[in-house]
Image (cartoon, rainbow, N blue to C red; front, side, top):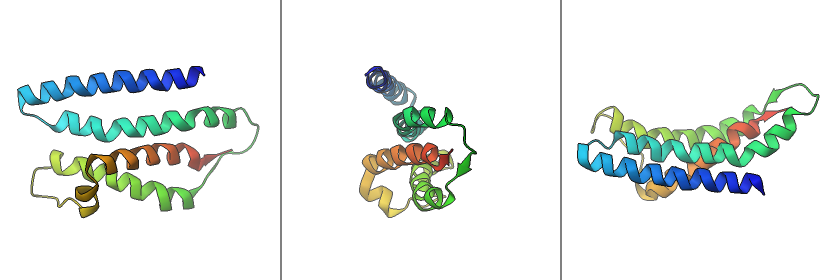
Length: 127
C-alpha cells in the first residue's frame, strides 16, 4: 500500500514538474529540457514499478547474474526508442533522422518504451 502511494506521489510531483518545464520552455523557446524529462521520467517510473521485487531479490543469498537475452531483445529496442526521441532535439534539427515508429507513436510510444526499459533494466539483474 505504501509503495502504491509513493509511486502516486512521484507521478503527481513529476507531472507538476513537467507543467513547470512546459511553461519555462514556452517562455525561453527551449524545448530540450522538457523533451529530456518526457523521455527519462517514464524510465524512472519503470524502475519504481520493478523496485519492490528487486529489493526482495537483493535479500536472497544467491550469486548475481544478468539476463543478457532479455536485455538485448526487449531492453535495447526500448532504449533506442527513448534515445531517438531525445537526440534529434539535442544534436540539432535535421542532422539525425527520427525513425518512423516514433513519429507514428508520438509521445505515447516514448512513454511506453521508457517504462518498459526501466522495468527490464532491473528485471535483467537476477540473483
